[in-house]
Length: 106
Image (cartoon, rainbow, N blue to C red):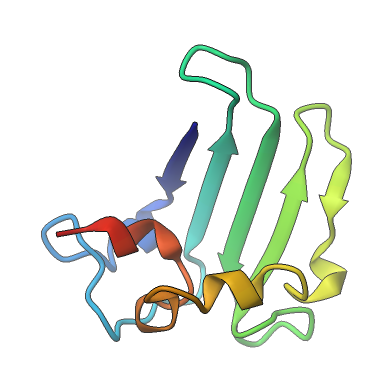
């Protein structure tokens, strides 16, 4: 079970609740994903993408990180999205600024 939240900057890039193909999130956009084993289960992982094209640790314009609910870093921004980008480029990810949440939109 995954729940995705956007900050106001990221949400401002949507058009009628959808992210336009070929669009780009502005700097400061934050996409936060909460991973749970079920709808009622406690979160097991937090995944964060922060758009910061000017940051040396950004991979494809994004800072990528994963944390446990206790705050342990699972995937550091220092890795520049090395384990994330290949999956985020699949299935329409490239036309949605690597945010795959929107590929299921009809």
